[in-house]
Image (cartoon, rainbow, N blue to C red; front, top):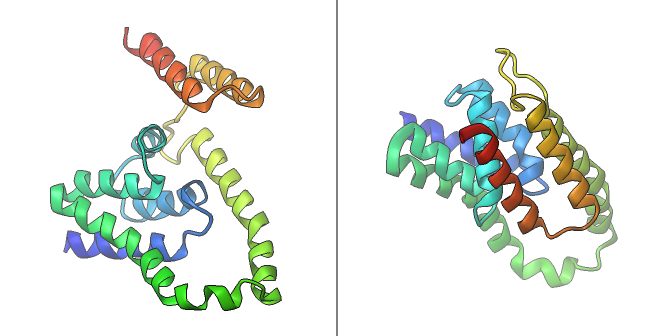
Length: 179
């Protein structure tokens, strides 16, 4: 039964998550944390952080991790396949029409209308990660977490290499919270 629940949950995420991993975060959080309660909000924030540091899309990384957490190796396989299936199926179905639709004004209009929605969903994901959960837990532990966040934002604004920002933030986090 858990495999079917994992499959359906991540199939929904794959079908209805537009705009990439960051835009999908609020949908993933809604289904995985709130609907099924497979993980806590703070665990979800940890998964997002780990998924950002590891290679690959956030949706696939989170599916693999949550699937493994919930149902072991086969759970990770089921969740990962389910989240990839919609994109793969849709791309295979429309590949032969891409050349004909490339200059279609209606398709261009739909894609242009989706851009602001994706930006809003990314903003919603950022706000969700910064606000306290319903159970009172927070994703930002204290003022030191906010300081690391502010420093990373400033470094990003000044166009410092993102890999360097992630590495320095990770080192600071380990040094502050675990040493």
